[in-house]
Image 1 (cartoon, rainbow, N blue to C red):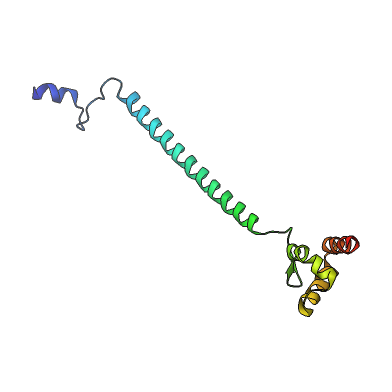
Image 2 (image 1 turned 135 degrees about the horizontal axis):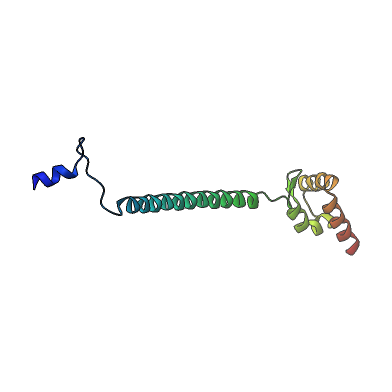
Length: 118
């Protein structure tokens, strides 16, 4: 039996591969490569999704439709416009309104229309 084994080995002690061994090894390597590609793709997709969610959150937090001009927001001007037109605001608030209206065309039109209605 030892003689049979030694006949199958070459001078360096290597044995020939069984039939289909290279095909099996190649299949294992392809499966590993596919698994690695899938994991890398999922990681990249997760990173992009996370970055997109952060960007969306950041952009939704920056509200450009309600800017603060002269320390008062457009939404506050609209909420208190009737009191401004009637002259019911305190002096400091009246001053803030006047500064805001001097710079904000949209609020100026709104307050002008409010004054015409009253």
